Image 1 (cartoon, rainbow, N blue to C red):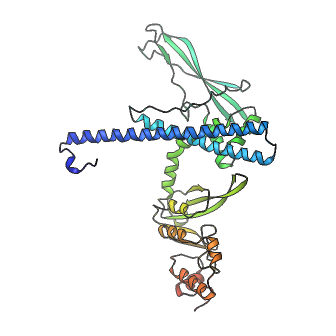
Image 2: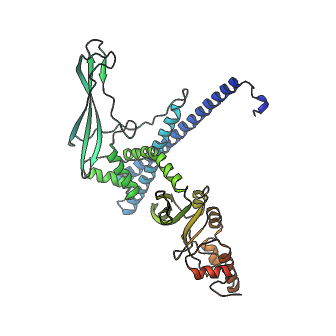
Image 3: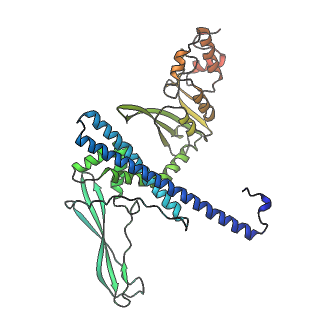
Length: 411
């Protein structure tokens, strides 16, 4: 049913009450959607984990010990890794959405029991100072009742250790109440990994391009067995924690007056082969122009080189977009084999026009099928050079473009 302006009450208090009710309903719907998304992600991760276990058992009993089978298992582990990380990230998002409501049940994933830390790892006791007086009545007559130990797995380069945070329990002889220091801070809620360990896992995965299954194998060889699902769980939690920082960097980069861009290939392990993905980078650096803003770079990843990716990145950008550029005279359009023109001249154009031009480029196969005559090819080349608002560092090329003279002379 559609609500019109005539259906709304004229009383301010009634309008405020209706607004509060509508916000509560929106928060409840948002929480329910977040919980449903977390459940679906958990189901996908569980299916991927069971599939991985089946493939491993099948290979162990019936399979051939060939290199191709090992690569297929590695690919399944990579897929499971991404699903497990996404499931944990969706779970944290659902918890945050549920916390803003009162009538939506939270969703908690069922995880296998984690094995205790190896006994051979050295323990470092960090005794948290307990309260001097009773937290209930303020009496100083306290005696030790016991202690709670929270173990956090931490890593020092080439050395592992477990930090034990000891929180003494103190009971009051006057009121019989128990006083204790608060639990130590963890980067992830209910986490067991220290910040240095989390930073190393993320850097190995995203900085050194080491998948989590290879990291797990290396840690096991060092005497610290950590399962693949455990590592993927930590990666998903860290992605959720770092999301605000990534958003700040993205807004800072795309708020620049001028933006530099380029892309590069990224080999990706696929089923029985290696795919070529793309890494798009956008750089803000106004230091050569005397700008006071600090430089920054934003990276995006895509599985293909489709023009829709840079168009989505630059959808809301309004400024000068600079990129390497060149034109290949043997085609009716500039060659875009790397989503840019060339590395011989530095050029710029408005971001909106660049994205429209990029989406209109024909594919290499279409250019090979349709080769125009030489005269038509020359006309297209001059038309593009004269109509594109590019700033070239070569003065002779600029003069040719402005006068309508291309590399093949006049008509």
